[in-house]
Length: 534
Image (cartoon, rainbow, N blue to C red; front, side, top):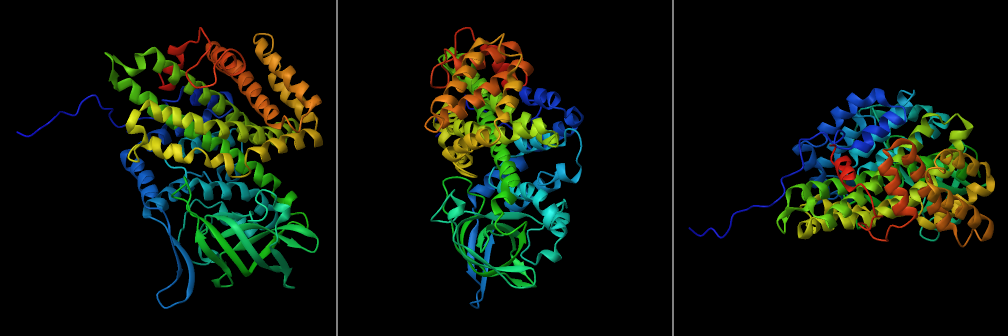
């Protein structure tokens, strides 16, 4: 009797679909980069991740962020972070699927590409818990060399989130504590001190401004010794007792809400030296490259999920007598968002293939330059991409009950984590200075695409000019051009011609500055079909 309206013209939930099959660029990329054998597994995982109960875990983990207890009810110091059960369920799933270690557990052709594809799909479900998964993945090679007993437990696919000594657990996860308040990315300014105890262990005293995932079983930390900055593995438990790591507070972050980031005091915390004293930076270089690689994957996945939500909405919502996807202005925006995903994913999967062949000097050169340039550009583009996709949903897009709001809050995180934009751009210059042959390897990836795409050749000449003229002041533009030329060349070689043409012309030619301002003649319909697996 008092009904005021019927609910209509609303978009149904995007659930119970095959997220892998819907992503044409991903399916093509997995085959192209050498992981065709994993296609069936990825279809299975793509279906699993879109089940309603799985989607609910992501929302619950963010609606109920971690809570810190410094002392128990009788006044004993405990430094415990309590997570919502959904967080532990997500962690257990990631570990079971091998996202923390599978290429190290079963090395072989295509294993890094397979893991990259699964991680890219998985982080679309929920991004925050990916932090300890990535840190565990990145630290595994270092621990294999210096702490094989820990490495063996890292390889386990059993997740154990209990607060107990590492010796009692079937599997372990790792966090990191590199950053201090006075130095930030300048880790050589760290003041934490490490003193040898005479039994092969060290005692660490200092303060860490950011320590991620404080309930991890151990942490890689940088500290000063008489020989200089050194790298240590500091377990949360030491000889059956809580180690002297005191959490001061949890950081109240814009995004990444499900993941605890903390500030800690090290009051004589014990740990083991990894590598040589004074060689801490050299010890973590490989690890940093891997965490940056996962930043690329995480941001690419965020772009994909934001686009997918926008396209799904536009296919169902009607305005001005047509479905939104049929409106030319909206179609141009969606097609442009798809182009960004195409480039981000192509570059990320190419770096995954390089990891699969990391013993080859050529692939090493690509990785040295590619993880810095890719981390810079893909992560830098993601916030703008997220807000444009969110806008496609109108008012619903900014509601916390829609995933687009969470994706927007997550979007800036990877651009800052593991070194912000300036750090990445300077690292690109450092790589080119120390190993100029990196640029030759890059050009080799571009060879064959210049003839058909003169804009690529023009951008390459511009890049070389900037390197000779004033590289330091142009570090960001140089890094941007490196990323765009590689993305364009990869699409020219591996994607349908109209996709590569649209990307190169819009990013290096006549396209505008905002999404939806594509070059004339772009095959919008093709891009929309690729966005939704048709």
